[in-house]
Amino acid sequence: MTKSGLSVFSLLFLTPAWGQEPRTEIMKWQDGKSACVSLTYDDSTINQFRIDVPLLNERSMPGTFFIITGDIQGSRNQPAFAGRPIMTIIRESERVPTTKENALERTSLLNYLQTVQLVPELSDFSAQRLGRFLQRGDYAELGKVVDAALAKLRKSGASYTVGPRKSAVGDKRYPLTWDEIRRYAAQGHEFGNHSVTHPFMPALDEANIVYEIEKSNEDIREQLGVKHTFSVEAPYGIDDPRVRTIVAARFPLTRNWVTDDFMDGFLRDDRRDPTTSTREYVQWQRGPLSRTTLDAMKGWVDTSIGHGIWLVLVFHGVEGIGWEPLTTENMRAYYDYIKAHEGQLWIATFQDGAKYARERVNSKVSTSRSGDAIAVTVTHSLDAHVYDLPLTARTTIPADWRLARFRQGEEVRWLPIYREGGNSFVMYRMMPNGKAVTIEKGAN
Image (cartoon, rainbow, N blue to C red; front, side, top):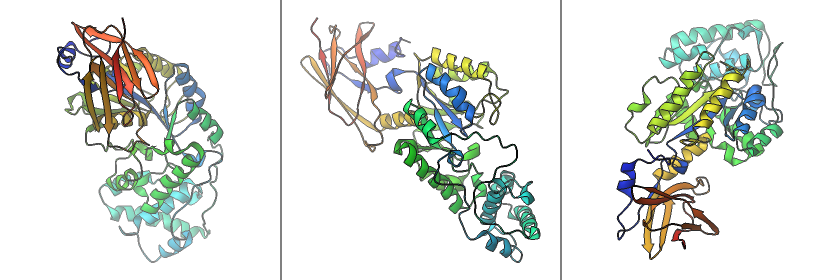
């Protein structure tokens, strides 16, 4: 491999003997890097911002943070139950048992009362524990659990309505403010949708799933702008076909599901070897846990570089706060390792990694030569207002060029010339769907 990540074979194949037309290739990853890594964080726990963001900023590395908007001070959309009046459902349950037809409305209600209203009669209820019944369609067993919980509510004699979130004694929430998040976004970090309350969505009906993601998106759009409404992660890393239909249709990018036909997906619980994939693009998600060794984490980076993989890292807790927390020492050492490989590894936000791959796959390239000037145009069929990342192009040039000047619109700069075995090329970032790029021979 050369310093640019190009093999001698690639150079021999791509560089023509002069007298032939030049050729242009769009590189797989930005700046011709061998692989891509995206650092993503779930749940917006406070140490991600107290500890991780400063570590990332020190290394000029962007992160993608999936935030629970109901926990952020100043959010307009608060936790709620979307549906019929709560007491109507509870009273109805005395004469109508739980069936497949009404189960999700009832589990949505119970989840709301247990996680938001902290109803004591539901202290042992968990929507997530219902997942095994839902997965195998066992509504008889699910109904037993739900009917027992509803019976407790009826027996209490209490009246329940939608209201503000209640806090438990010793609640360890550390709410952020939107002002703080805007400051982090201005530093180059991406923010994504992780719902209003972080529910287990397979146990919610469609109305409550839609409320969770659309109301979260409203606050993100209002506070941060439309750019930060690109990515979503349905909580708990779920892979549920019903939820997928509802969520994936509303977002350009999900971290739960790889929806691009040209990309193979190996999600967090997937133990298959990603290097066995035959597709050009592979998204490989790994989620470090408290017990994960630093050597194992470094190995993910090495594998990705060696095979051109998009490594998507999923972090949660940091330094004792949050699920499966990692130590500051390990985070710092891991970031140093990733930064040390930046010559081969493009460190990108989650949305930028996806945007680049989609732009490249959907691009058409045209290259022509007139005297000592080469013209290159790149167009793609995607929405140019959304897909606005520059692509990295590589164009072959005559062997006798010593200087090359790049021009696209008002942008003009000199390009380094790469040589290998008598073959020559230039590599540069260009905006697709823009004016043609001109590469000219410079005077010696």
